[in-house]
Amino acid sequence: MIKYPFLDLKRLTAPLAAELKEACDRVIDSGRYLHGPETASLEHEIAALCSRRHCVAVSNGLDALRLIIKGYKALGILHDGDEVIVAANTYIASLLAITDAGLTPVPVEPDIRTMNLDPAMIGQAVTSKTRAIMEVHLYGTPARHSEIARVAKLHNLLIIEDNAQAIGASEHDMPTGGMGDAAAFSFYPTKNVGALGDAGAVTTNDTALADTIRALANYGSDRRYHNIYNGYNCRMDEIQAAMLRVRLRHMGEDKINRQLAAATYERCISHKDITKPAIIDGTDQVWHQYVVRCSNRDALQKYLAENGVGTDIHYATPPHMQPCYSGMKHSPLPLTERLAAEVLSLPIAHTSKREAEEISEIINNFRL
Image 1 (spheres, helix red, strand yellow):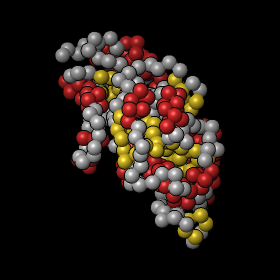
Image 2 (spheres, helix red, strand yellow; image 1 turned 90 degrees about the horizontal axis):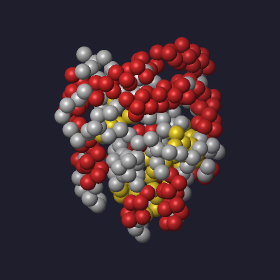
Image 3 (cartoon, rainbow, N blue to C red; image 1 turned 30 degrees about the vertical axis):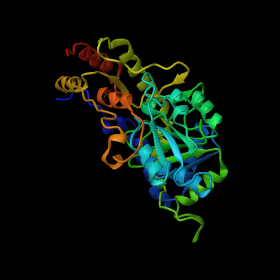
Image 4 (tube, one colour; image 1 turned 180 degrees about the vertical axis):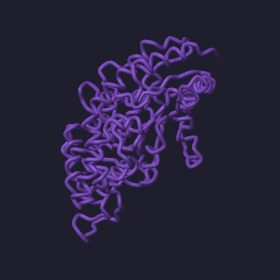
């Protein structure tokens, strides 16, 4: 029996139920279910959170990434065959957006300490075809943007943020989603700010890009029945926007709870064979996942399950080893493959200080 579930969305949502139902009723009573005031307000609130001029609410996180790249293509800034450097250990959505747009992903090893893209590796991967870096803020820890930005400036590269897992995080007081040229957000229900369905967003200071993405997401139209692009149907509906506005108001509380649980794990886990995630100076980490590493990960996961602790693996198979990318050319990625064999995510989303202490004690009693 699992005493400490990895993620219980019902438990996570229950304290907000009355507000969520009120928001839903407000939309139902309005008679406006797309392109309404809830979406406009959410866009304004996310743009302000990220210190960006523009936010475009869209259907999901993958579409947000796809629309950024296709927006740059529509503007003539990116082209078929251009290369995009991306962390090799990211979730596959990062690469799917690149290949879907006809561009070439170049997976690069992460920093073993942060598990984010290693800035020192980027320069070695740049070629005459490189046009962008996709900066993924994995597990709620900001990528080393200040260092990545120096490399990008040296080679005149765009920075596209995959901010699916780090809303509310920052590096040196600069918010994720407000670091690069454009940023994609996912509001999948399991995220720190989750919809009650699927949703996403794009932020940018580039007015031309924002206008292009808004048009592409609405059948390619800049006004009714006037289609300037071969577009898509990637809109966020009003009910999800209303749900997200509620979740956004409580983001700070959720962040504090996660940070308290992470601090408890950091203090209490003392097993010599368990590597805890790094606490990065100068960053505000939001702990979308609390990911430990163990050379005997599968045995640890089995042991924890037997002792009532739910866990998950993010991610057991890196993108370059997935069947759909079997023909992709890439440099050797031994660190990425090692991480895939070692990482294990502990409960964090609704874990109290006491629960984190109890889980830590169970971990400390693990025997290889």
